[in-house]
Length: 400
Image (tube, helix red, strand yellow):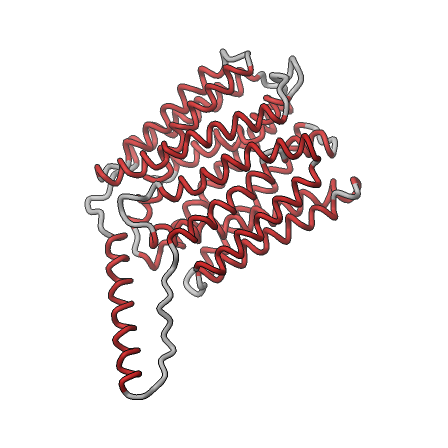
């Protein structure tokens, strides 16, 4: 029941995920009349400023061992800024407000991740994260449905933004009354202690085997904290490089209506829900690191396949939505595994580093994606995104 607040929060941002790109690039009367480069500058600036903000929110919540207040701050600031957006008819003002909103938006990420980690044992982290994401993905899906209804019935921009504001305000009150900070914060430290004990035990076994004249098969190569973070940066870069201009690709490149674009993203959200369901079912049996590398490689293959598909506009209209569904399914598995591994590898007090790594990649990709699409075309954009996904896979193979 405590997750219901996050569902309403996701509804607001699910609606915005398609609404904002189309509104910024839309022609006068239906949008702000901006370009793909304007969209890239706005999103990348927001993400760049969110990098120090993410580190700060993650550090301060671990320092104070208070998590709920930062979630409340994020949700309330979103509600207020959505209302202020209704007065922003100038593209520069809209972009500035979007950047400010995102700095406060990321305040909830690290506290949310820690709350789940501290409420469950390490064995249940993948299952818990996947369940949380599956539930909140319902909110994202409902938000896309609301966007579809708003465009179908001609809801004005102002009413759409007020709707998002109301959803964020509902999320604020649900968190206020339904979520509590953990009484004790120790699970992540306990996992760190267990890893050290396990390493010491394996070292003792190996030494004993060597003294007995036997060969030891124990491997003591530790996971690289830097390498893991670098792989996250590459993956986030590739993801946003590919996805940021995607609503524009469907609207302008394939001639989809606004209603059809929302429908495509509804299907994508269903793909993500299927991915979270898969993780929950196999979480006990899976090797997290091995599956993480596989889903990154799968994403690279899927993005490269779009290069062949877009050569035919007729097939692209049917196959591109299918590819996006599988991309979101793979992302759902990736996201749960990364959350669990990051809570294990990143020490307490540095929970914001995950968001910093994601922010570095997404900020760069959000600018480069629209820029490459506008200057060199969508085909080149897809090729570069697939290559960066492949680079993320190689990094994981080398360092983890």
